[in-house]
Structures are given as C-alpha cells and as structure tokens.
Length: 525
Image 1 (tube, rainbow, N blue to C red):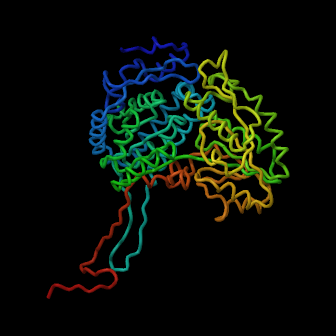
Image 2: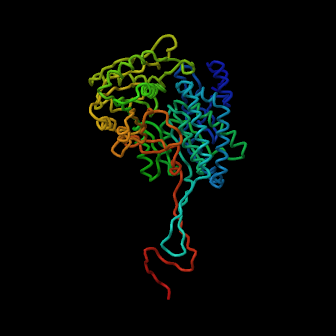
Image 3: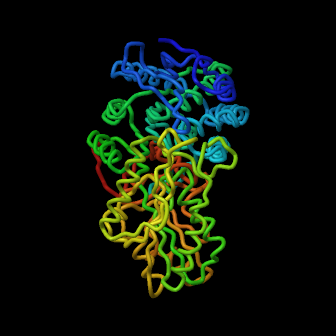
C-alpha cells in the first residue's frame, strides 16, 4: 500500500526533513534507473529507527530482473559519461557538493535518525561527503600518467589511465552515505558510472542522496544512469560480485562478507576493493599525555556506539600506569549520556538493531567465561526512552590479548584493557597480534617510542596514528587496512587509481621499426 511521508509516525521535524530531501512517498520504493527498489509485489522490508522504533519507510527489495535493468541503464549511461572531459565531470561533482551543502542539516538528521549515530556525527558524515566532492573536483584535473624514455630511437613511451566502466559499491549501515561517496565521487571524475547497493538496514539515506543527485543530473541534461541505486539484500550483492559487466566491486562490511565478495570477483578475474573488519588498538606508554589520551580513547570506543570499523576495541597499557588509566575510565564510563541521537546532550546513541545487542551481550558473556573481568557497563537499558531495546551501557573489560573474543571484532561498545610490561616493542607485538589490520594508535611523548611504532617493524595496520585516536580519519589520506581488513584503499591520496585501467603507450615517430632488446627479425629483402 502506498504511503506518504505525512502518514508516517514521525514528528514534524523529521517529516520536514524528508520533504526537504525530496522524499514524498515511501512505497513503492523509487523504481527508476537512478534509484531502483523493485516493483510492488516484491519482497518488502520495513525500515525502523533504532532511536525510537518508529517506522520510517517500507521499501520493496529488488529482484534479479530489477538488477539486470539497472546494469543495462548504467551501461548506456557510461557511453555518454566516458566522453565527458574529466574537468567537466569534476564540475558535476562540484554541483553535487553544493547541493549537499544546502541539505547538510536535513541529511545529517536523517542519517542520525535512520542509523542511530548522534546528530553531530550525522553532520560529520555529510561533511565527509562534501569534502570528498571538493577533493574529487581538484582530482579531475590531475588524473596524470607518466612519460618514460624509450630505448629505441625516435620513440616515446607514456602511461595513461582510462575509466573502467561500472563500479559496484556495497556499503554498510554504520556509515550509510559517507563511504559510498568516497567511492562514487572519485569513480565519477574518473569517468565511471556507479551502482550502489546500500545496507538494507539504512536504505532511506541512500534514496535521499540519489534525489539530490537527480536534480544535478537533470539540470545538466545528463543521463540518470551515471549514479544508480539498487535496494536489495545479499542476493543483489552476490549478483554484482559475479557479474562480468561490473569490472570493480567495492565492498564495506564484515570480513566474512568480504571473503565471499573477493572470492566471487576473483573467480572472474575482476577487481575488488575491500574494507572489512577492524580490531583497533591504542597503546598507552608511560610517557603518554593522559588527558589527551583519555578523550581519544572514550570517543574511539563509544562513538557511534562502537559501530565504526575504526572503533577502539583494545587499550594496551603499560603496567606502571595501568591502574591510573583504569580508575579514570571507571569514573567516565558510568556518566556517559546515553539517549536519543537527536538530543543535543547525547554522546552515545543506540545500536542498530536487536541482533547487534545480542552480539554485544554474547561477547561479554563469552569473554568472562574465558577469564575476562567486566569492570563497568554491559547492561541493556529499558524503560522510559529506551523502549526499543537497542540502547546499551558501553562496557570496559579486563582481558588478555589472546582471548578468543578479544581476537574477534564485536561491532559494539566493548573496550578491552590489556596490560603490557617492558619496552614499546612488547606493546606493538600485542597490537599486531590479531588477524585484522585497519587502524592503530600510540600515545607517547617519547620520540624513540613513536618512531618505533611507525617503523617498518612497528604497526602492521593501514592506519597508524601518533597522539590521536583510531577513529576520525580525514579524507585526504588513503583509508584502508591490511590482513583480514582486505587491503583496499579509498578516499584520498592516489586511491583514484583503483577506479581506472592503466595503459602503456609507445609511439614510433621514425621511419624505422627497431625492436626492443636489440632483437633482429628481418623478413624483407
């Protein structure tokens, strides 16, 4: 049954937000090449807010037939888009960034309400989108190759980059729009077209972004199929991963999911960009600035309710300051403001759903069975304001690095305190002693310790920070990690290269045909 936004059980402020973003009707989901959610009569999913349990929308999940139509639409759009000069493509992305600026507050509220992160983080996520648009605009004039000297006389060699075609983006619920934009805006200036499958837990923010982009494309008389959205479950992700028409699949999520994507894409010799699990640690040495470190620890551990891939999960503390750090944390944690994410006083919002809550409580139960000691938190909140059952008290646990649950990534606010003795190399060994390798940090004012951490025998993560936490990466640097984190790089630096194919060109401007390596192969008299 079709339903208008005004008929949803939302307060007026959130109803106005949806109107500002161009969303008037929530069922059936937006079935165009730009934003395809399937036809009426398909399998439907109800989208509810973890903040208050209210229904935001009902979306129809796409089928294999729907997916094929989206791919065909994207293929046709690519024929147009690849011929647009890169700086002109950058101009379109600039306009998208300007539209995002206009809708920053509304979109930030929708991100916060649909996903559950606090409003300030919702605004920050939209700002990331704006920032990557700015970065991509500059990049559109810097898609450079290299010129090399040929060993053959009167020959010139150079490298250049060409667009791949369709880039598939599978994004996760915790950053429902920012990580997509990292991929989409860079891929767009590279000349690619994009098919985006957002998390089925947070599809409405994706629809809102596509409405914003639709305006820009229409104003510039460009085909809608440059940016495509398909709302579906794991079946759509599998179709994309196996599809030879999609040369690159960028997937963000769990290591388990990423292995499936990587295997499917690799089997057809496609390219994959994987951003998977993190098990991030902060090392605190004896010389750490304690006040600065504590702020970074708490934000890293409880920000987004512990649902960032860069969330701080392990705190590796020198034995001489261990009790001091523990005492400080046990004063802070019980007083953390937990509540509705749109409340300005809230620092910790809800987990995304009941499954996440169960993962939280199960992890705490198992780590205690292994010998861990729960110091504070761990409760599931109930009562007035917490009726959804998705609010929890962030937990602090004394543990050992080798415990099975410490080795796992639990997407929830659990901070493991781990003691080390001796020099910093012992701490680094603990930091590296997990299967994941995304983000890491050290707090120390000792130059020898920080340089050891950054040296080639130091942190084995894709991100290694000194005197800042594990969370809150800027878009200017390449983002990604090693080992079971997948090895992908998104956002800044030279991450753009993954969205293009590399080509070596040799031009002979002589009237001879010398061969490389001095080979003689004469067939003419």
